[in-house]
Structure formats: C-alpha cells, structure tokens
Amino acid sequence: MTSPFILPPDSTKIQPDDHVCRICNRPFPHRQALVCHQSVVHGETPVKLSKCPHCQTVMSTSRSLQRHITAVHHRLKPYSCELCGKSFADPSSCRRHLKKTCSVARKKQWLQ
Image 1 (cartoon, rainbow, N blue to C red):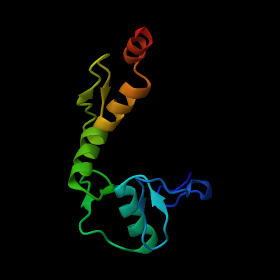
Image 2 (image 1 turned 90 degrees about the horizontal axis):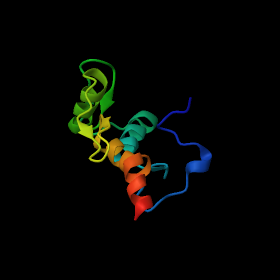
Image 3 (image 1 turned 90 degrees about the vertical axis):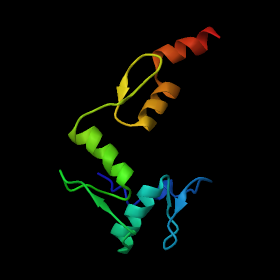
C-alpha cells in the first residue's frame, strides 16, 4: 500500500492547480494532502490540527473533520444526486458521480 504523503515517481509532474511542497517540490492535488505531507515527512506542524474524537484520524481543517465524522462515524450521506437520487457522504463525490457515472445524466446527454 502506498502512502498518501509520498507520491510515486511517475506522478511528480506538476499541474497548474497543484499545491507544491516548498521543501522538496513535490506536487499534491489538494492543500490538505500537502499539509499532511509536510507534517509527516518534514516534521512541520500546521497551525492547528483537528483530531477526531472517535478514532486516530487527524485533519488540517475543522470542516474536513466534520465531514469525516459525518461520513465515517455517523454513516450519513447528506448529499444526493439531483437526477437519480443516489446519496453521497461528501459533495465532491456527488459532483463526480453527476459528471462521470450518473446513468440519468448520461441518457440526457445522449438524447441531446
């Protein structure tokens, strides 16, 4: 299993919207991944880490922690697809579903 903090060699191409580590120049697709990398690999501590009261998970923002608790511990899926009704734990998964896998959306695009 690969670590989310150290990217494999073939994934070091920097994209325009990547967050780049100022110490080792490794790119990360999300700010949170960069913060975790800097903390684990380089020993830097972010301004404030939010620890989950139910498990050992640590998040860089309280919003991320709240989403984690809602999805993992409460097993809630408050976000749903407007077209097919499928439920998701976080809004990004719902958006990705709508763009890539929603059968109703794909049928609508095919009919146009």
